[in-house]
Structures are given as structure tokens and as C-alpha cells.
Image 1: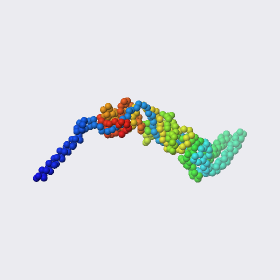
Image 2: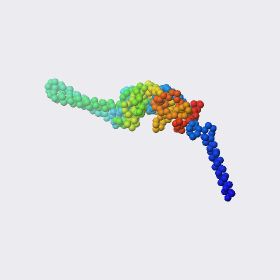
Image 3: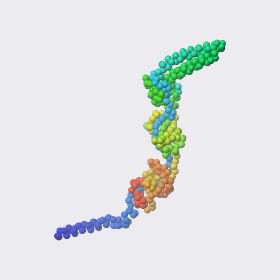
Image 4: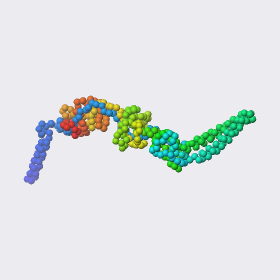
Length: 356
């Protein structure tokens, strides 16, 4: 019985001591206590910045590939013909009318010889009929028949010569050959080009711009073009904006002209930055911007070091900066806002001014 009483006394003593210590750790126990937790209590240390009123460049970044400005195809005009010789190769700069390949046309030359004989026969008959008709020994109708036979023989001979001439595949335009499918011994097909040519050697960038941004583009805009493996960018210009939006991609094709004499390969991957203009407003770091269901906002630190929500209208955003419409002059803006802050929280402002 005595042991039980002594054990109960010991437990009560421990409880009393715990309560006393607990109270000593509450805000009321400290000197100058605030009272209820959270009111005026410092939760976080933040850095603040002053917004700047200025203009920043408005740019659109796009990617694409190099393509010929004009893609010229050397197509065979005769199908099913065997290629006898190839007279040009990839990398050659050819002139308009230059021989690129020769096709087998032996059967056509045989036809020409037969049609030449037929043409000469009808020509002689027409000549005799003309002489006889002038002496009124044959009718005028007979002469017309001989004239028709002569015209038909001439047309057949001209057609055979034209087909024989098509066995010589000529360059349709002057330019640089960048692709070749012609091979000696191969057969031609009407839908298969033997050579692909960059007309005049002029290449340009082809890029797809989302429809939400394409309306801001204008022909002649300056473009900074970066080619893979080249340290220095090239100065290009927007040459063409297609008046069509792709059904699947929802993007508009844009062609960017490169400087004359640009030496690069068709198909090269390219990055470009199109200069749209400048947007003026109040500029803060991108890390300062927050957004929720109510829209974008900033955190302002007032004179009591409490944070206040400042709703803003974003005019433009880049990876580094945000331009807003509202005037922010004289306000202390939290430079690196985070999800831990809440409206009316009391914070400690870092003296260094750097984000913590």
C-alpha cells in the first residue's frame, strides 16, 4: 500500500514539472511575447528587389532545318529507260542545260530511221502530185491527200526525234546538286527525280511557328540564326510567312533568308531568334512571379516587414525577366518568391539583397 502511494506521488510530480516547462516554452513565457502564434512572428528570411521601368527585347525562339530556297528536280521524261551514264554527282555546281545523265534510246533511233524514210517518200509523192496538179493532170483533192500524208509523216518524225532527245537528262536550272538517285544500269520512273538541285546554291531556314505567335511576324524582321557547330550567329531576315496553319501541328511555316554565300548543308539543324520589337513596363525577375487560380501576382514587403499580395498583368515573360503593366515604383518586391509565403506573413529582409 505504501509503495502504491509513493508511486502515485512521483507520477504527479513529473506531470507538474512537465507543465511548468511547457509553459516556459510558449510565446507568453518569453520577454516581450507576442501572444497568439503567427501574429508578428518572423517565419522566413527573404531578399527584396526594386522593380525597374524599362523596355526589354521581345523575341520568338524557333528551331528548324536548312532547305533550298528553290528545290529544282531533274526528272526523267521517259519511264522504264535504263541509265547508260551519269555525268554529275552530289556537290557539283551545274549550269542550266548541262548534261546530267544519258538514257538508253536505241529503239528510238531505229524508229527515227524508219520514220525518216517514210517522211522522204511522202515528201517525194507530194512534190510529184504538186507538179501534176499544176498541169491539171491530177485533182486538187489528190494533192490535199498527199499533203496530209506528208504532214503526218513529218509529225511522227518530229515526235520520235523529241523522244530521242529526252534520253539526255539536262539540268533544268543552274545550281548545286545535293541529292542524286541516278545509278548506271538503273531504270527510270516518272515520279522519281534523278537529281535534286539547290537553285543558284541559295539555302534558307524553314521553321514552324505556333499560330499563337505567327500573327506577330512581319516580312523583313531581323533574325539571329545559329547553325550547329558554328560559334558565331548569322544575320537573317524573315522572307516568307505562309498564309496557312497546319491542321495537325497548328503552326505556320516561316522561311528565313540567310546571307549570300552561306556555306551549309541542306537538312542542317538550326536555331533562330526572331526580333519582334520591345515591350516596355515594370520589370522584375522571373523568379519573383507567382500564379494561382486567381492569376499572376508578386509578394510585396511593406513597412512592417509583412508580405502583401500584389496582383499583376503580365505583358511579356522571358526565362530571366517578367514585364508587368502595373506601376511598382518604390515597392519592395520579394526577389525569389516561394510557396511557403502567405499573405500578411512577417518576414526578415536579408541585408545582402541576395535571394535566400
